[in-house]
Image (cartoon, rainbow, N blue to C red; front, side):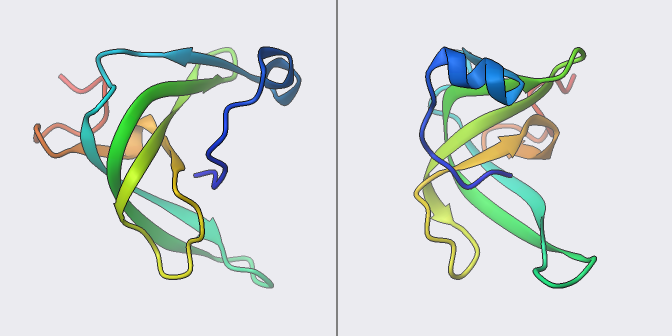
Length: 106
């Protein structure tokens, strides 16, 4: 998960190694997102959980896209998390309106 909530211009996106896009079907969906973050000064990671609303904006990384969706309107976030949004990996999403995990679940 990334803690930045702003979308850079296309040129900056290419330089950062991802392709930005928008999926209207994901816009407005409420979801839970679980992931991890490195614990400073260690070789360990801790779990982080978020609940919020997807904007539909995404970033694809790599030749075989690794998709991350932008989540805002956070109603659950880790203590001390200072941002208003988070990027969530698609396979880490659980939708409130669906039992299936991730946007490609069948």
